[in-house]
Image (cartoon, rainbow over all chains, first blue to last red; front, side, top):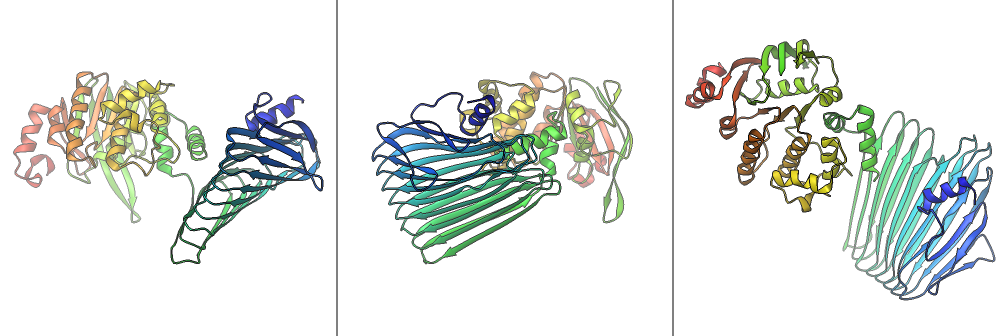
Length: 305
Length: 240
């Protein structure tokens, strides 16, 4: 692995070296390393690009890293990864994609991740997207996350895209059975002429199920963002979706929250707010000795933390 | 020492010029505890904002230790040692109490060091140090955090705009104690805008501002009795 690939790996997965536990590293469209454990099995798909990950029931406190890095300009790929998480398992999955594009052709990674959580399974899923390189070719990522939560299952998803992705079309879908919980924290920042679309569709089917989606976004320069959150409450359930965005320069942001209650016992809330940085926040930090630019940076860093 | 020479401040109000400060002349000596008081709408907060650079002057000069700082930015004045605690503290999403105290101190202060300032303002440091300075904090909690940040700054000139506003009666007692302690350990000057007799009582000097003008300035012993003896504010000669 060369220096560029190592840097990408560090950015998307926080890895300086080969991780402990299970992992599958994909670099420039091929496998660059894999480790299975006693409880986590990784199998290459035969009909298409991608892997099946089988996590045995009652697997506790194990982690799985599945980073994807692309440093070859012009590479385009679609990868299908399916995660089967057994009853009562409790694991952390760290995914992510880093693209370095130093050429003039577009590089693209479409990652389609499906999660099947059995009864009582718990997953913390961390996904980070990062792009760099000074080529004219675009860095494009279109992640899809499809989550099926069984009875009392819990999935917490943290997705971060802060830098360097020119175009992203993100789709996240979830269906929840009785007592299941789906929690999402999304952090998104666009600059230049980048575009990011993020669409959520959540079906709260089971009694006592709950979803909590919080998206924090910053759009600067001439970038554009679209946030769509559709949530249906089909039983006695709780749903909350929130989009909070800071708009700067000549950027444009649209937020389209939609909540549908199909049961009298469904309790759903949506909140959406878009605005520039409050002037008084900048003034306060300036009275502590920060310049206007430093104050702005501090506010954005905090907001996206 | 801070000196204001013929400082005026005019703002636009319904398309008309409104003079908030009218040619103010004021000298704030070093190492004094100075309380600015006066009726609402008299120009006290504007005076504080003009000194800290948040509000631009429309005339006159501000000198700090002899140096003209009239045209300096908020940032440059902060770096010169002017600290300002807001009457209505600002909320931030994702910025912690610890972050603000560290920014105020201008150094990567230890958590224990930052906690000491929270304890001084009567907050249980462990419960607050890692909280976001956002809508989850009450107005009174925010005020106390704002004061803790000013303490951490230990600036040559600390300005507090109505620190008692929004603080409940129980906390107010502690607040007075905070300011009494500050006076004892005074390193630099403190300028407090306040209506509270107990804060006025701690003052070395009192400045009375009304109608955009300095109506009186002097030692507490000379000014306070007159303020208190007036049956109501309207009959006080300083407020005329």
